Length: 423
Image (cartoon, rainbow, N blue to C red):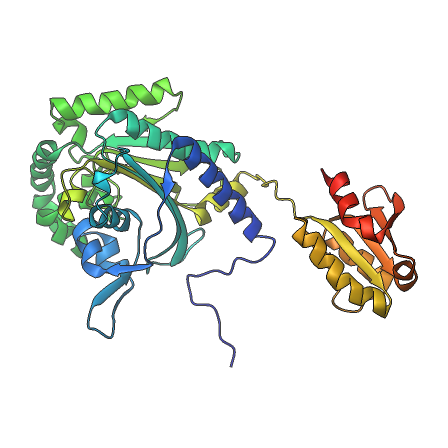
């Protein structure tokens, strides 16, 4: 019986995984520049964490979570997103008492959602995200957006569209909520059952519905921007001004609400405008979530963050025909001919690696021609050729693979000599 990979998951093989590693490396470099530090949270959390933070009316909580009961009778869920777990840790570990504020964190790792698999979207996917906790300055909103945009830009993406909106503060949202209820209530029977449930609980979620997105009432729904109070309006204007100061182009879309309940004030998405990318164009999403820390038992603390998936990042690179400069090469391949030379090559290979070099040898007892072919496939810079006669004479031949130049070196001096030419 053949066991297949679960639906909605993907093996990332050698040759492909190097692209992922390059993106991971670039993300870490950017976070270091922006002074964000890595946090690693558990792969599963208490189910209540996501119900309370993400929102029990969201698709994630209602339909997409991988939830199970452990042997102790506890309800646990594989993390479907990153913010809730980071904020839980922030509260539990009392990071609000850290001397350096705001606390700026980033994470990278797998997330899990039971949704329909499609191009660039999987049930297990890898997310990179950042969270900045402790500042209500609109400048940090711009910083978070700039970090996300720069990650895409520095790896070559150009066909991008940044869309932003303000969801306002509590007062603004309550006023907008009443307007939405009055707008949708007369014809709510024409909407899906999820929207009917959301009408009273969280009518803004209706705007995020995938089934009814083409309904005519969606196009005429009240705009949150018309209900922003003075403070919320000034905050949003400040964010826009900072983005202009940073030369980051954007569009304002009053229908952008994001799919999670904890957002308020700034919300944003980065989309791919590449031709043929697909119907779902969103690459990255985020926003401000003032109030979430208090919801999870912490002190009043503002926060903002974003998350993006590496799968969709790579799909966008492919849509723009961008090849990441991933070099797969080694410093030295040992070509050993003869039993004694092969035996000695085990020790020599170890010496090369301990000296800091990437190196390889033949393990299939191939002829010399086959070993050179293997060296070519490894993109070896040098081949160190050792036969029984050379071993007896305490010599080894070093060949530069791109030019074919070859020289004979004392075996005792080989490692030091190799260091000198590789400096």
